[in-house]
Length: 324
Image 1 (cartoon, rainbow, N blue to C red):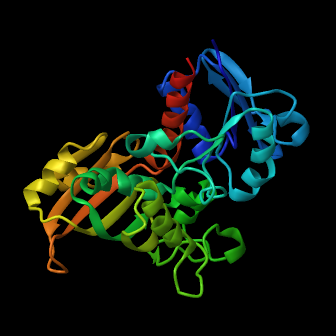
Image 2 (spheres, rainbow, N blue to C red; image 1 turned 180 degrees about the horizontal axis):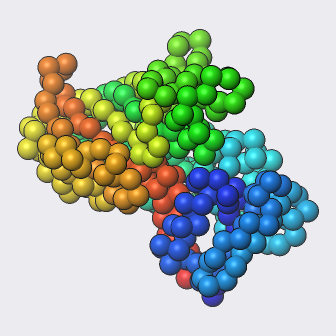
């Protein structure tokens, strides 16, 4: 039986990739509807040999039909405006924003799919999703005592307008980012709180503990915007609770689902290589002197795929399988 699925925010970077993932995961035989802002009305996507026209997102249009599932590829303010009402109408919503991550489960299917049992299911932050793909099996086998992230996040993580910032724009009102990114990097992402921690960093700290279901892990993060179009890279230092060797960590990574361990093959630890690949790539494993059982890895993943759309569509795929 076909399911009625709606993609909200269908014409943004993540929305377009979500439509692509729906096709890749062979969910396009379902009844798909697309919504976006007024500026995108009338755009057409070919899905399962049918031309699907993008409708304007407003209450009259969105609530005139009942949907089984909704994918919200939208910022927090849009999610806040529509999701709760959709839920009251019987729709299960997968929200890509951070609007409901404190209230509802944050799901990475390879890690905690068993918790995907609410009417609102949250996609993680893109860097958290990519990072935890590498860390989850290590935590399961050896326990994580502490994790320290340094992220190098691509422009696409800030939306399609940020990609225009790759060419220097001196008028601030024409830029998506706060500062020129050409030949540069920006040492924070999101608003800075009183403790000097950015919004993006707070997301990673909170979501790591919630997804791994362990509030005792000590987490810190430094999030940096870099002049790369797609793919986030993360340097991760971590300390395990159990005594382990480099070989133990290497084997844990090699046996992690949808993770490619590439060791010191640096050609495969670059955004240019990983772009549009479904797996997360991990290498540069080494022991550090920071603490006993302390190690370092370098992780690269496509932020539009595992960091967003692919993860959300994986959740959708599993929910549909459950309903059969």
